[in-house]
Image (cartoon, rainbow, N blue to C red; front, top):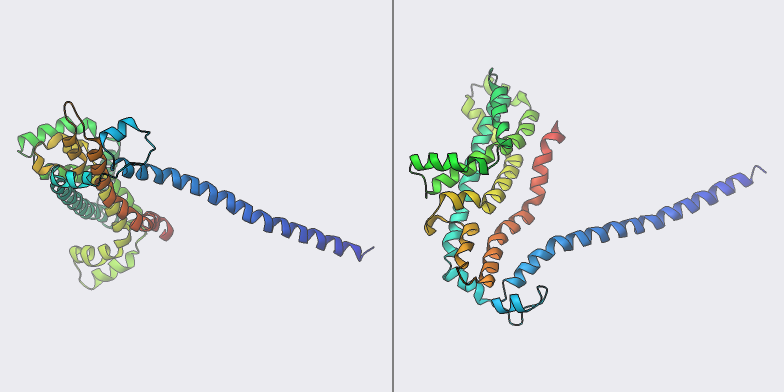
Length: 296
């Protein structure tokens, strides 16, 4: 009687183990199938846009939206680059995006350093003022900003775009930097003070190098926003010399006819750089956002 129980237990253990072994591949299969479907849904609009950019107006309106182009119109890309002034728009987009991102990250790092690493009475009220910026809608500021830029002769100037991008990206950038700065060890700064380092040396030579992971994250997020922005450029810029890709698409929209293939090619050119940058640096974004919480 006593010798039978271990045999039954062993049989049950084996059966449970077999069930687990069978269940794991099934569960992983279901999970990966679901992820493949989600990935396909995310990638398909980009593939559709690429095929759309290789069609002419007749194929777009007379054929199925899901059909392949009968003869790929690669000349659409040549047309937008040579006739549509896309080269100038592309340069402007890069200029505004990089300049505003560098300025935003530098100013946000200074503000966050002053709030978290220095002791002064108004630090929390100042932080609250910056966080209020997260609740202000962009469209509600267009008229006051337009009036301000008009009085300061900054309408139709790249500086109006760079300043607007910087101001609206500061709150979210400070919020991301805040957790990382709070987790930095103060012993390093105290040792630097004992060695006679000034506040500028501490910030530029110690703090900034230690915060490079989260700085890279905020820079990428800023560049994605700046590259895709439309409202500020459309409101403050009127001449073709200073327009960006997002606004330059309107050149192919006429009063009576619209070159939809050229618009598709322009959209493809505009999303490709930021798409490549996101794929290459997506891991850095996640690492930088979670770095502060992990260290804390």
